[in-house]
Image (cartoon, rainbow over all chains, first blue to last red; front, side):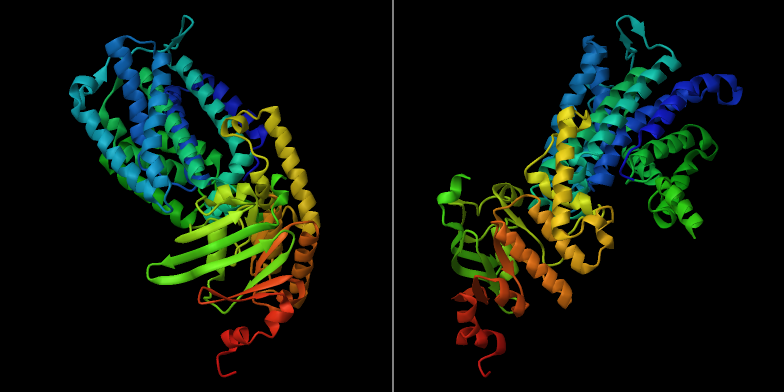
Length: 317
Length: 259
């Protein structure tokens, strides 16, 4: 659970590498790399969120807002001011870090689930701003004409190119986060999760760590938002509503929140469910999510990441 | 060790702690001499654990000063006080149950060796060296407390006696000048109690000052250099074990006036 082995990461990276080629060979899943781009973007958010929830024990119901802040900063600065998209990405991350610190600091200094409340309110406020500040955001109609990304003349203009860009960043974020988890910092986070008073008595600055992880997860969400905006070239507020925040929590719960691999697996599954496999259900889709959440909470509290352990348990008997 | 000249590691002056209308500690004054084992005893509800919580920064006292190595610490947060060199255990075991025995002690090293978020994310060579150093220190401590062969076990899986030892080990990992032990023998059988008291003596022999809350009078009388008796948040007696044993006020507090 704790040691994040190198082999699975290598296998995972190989899978990411060959997936577009494989998909091209099978007409039925030809368009899957496109969905995988979205899955990758969402993985960036859930990797950070998994660190926050599973390791630091804090719940955020406002990550759609950080995702949206990244997307809108990228959109507004590139469309209205013609700025360099990479610079906008950086600005988005810095602004999000400051906003997250402002939102998180008062509630994370308290014990208990105040962060959930604060982020819930924050998410709703930001959603209203996206809708109402029409001269900046285009209001409910959204904003279009957001440029694609290019690096030193290389255009990320096809699905496959963008796929490799996004997943390259996801793997980098995954490895960085896995390293943190396996270090003394990760140990401090797990200590906070187990007993805040004991962690404090051992010299761990509990409030500072919770704020740090919250800011880190918000910055990753902002980065994801920028990638989203530059991929779709269009954004509107509906993407960043409360339901998306909840969907992120379902992704993590399904995968297993005490395992960073769970974030990847859960995000992949939910993204394919909502973009592809559940199209048939239309608005009843929500019921399926509810059922998944219920099933996981009752039957699989460790999420899918807990399944190998359960299977091992059967064999030992 | 800049504070070697200070004869008293810890000094409390006029410490008052109230919770709403309840006075848990009232005008408490005492000193802890460097290198001694000092026990705090008193009936249930006398304010012993509150006193520990005030000293270690769980909450600041309503009034009064707590001086550690000549500097006031009563306004500091718990983690800052840990950094200064006071470590503690808890009355109800507060181990990190989601971690192994070794990891619990490794976390105890946090006050002395730590890596930043960024450095650990990039696994800089420096942070890898530190991690190795932490591991070695922790293994040494596990040997000292006699849990070396269980280093891989989950902290939750240990019997209570060993959990109590592990908590002491975790506290030792920060190499504190003062260690506060909250009922280290509570819930232990006779053999375990014996192990715990020899461990406390061994810790003290290495130069660490020990402040101890304990109900087991045999332990207290055997290992303490000095005893402080609390009742209703007030100091009612203080002195060497033999004086305390015969103090009429102490007997009255424990057994009632008619005894």
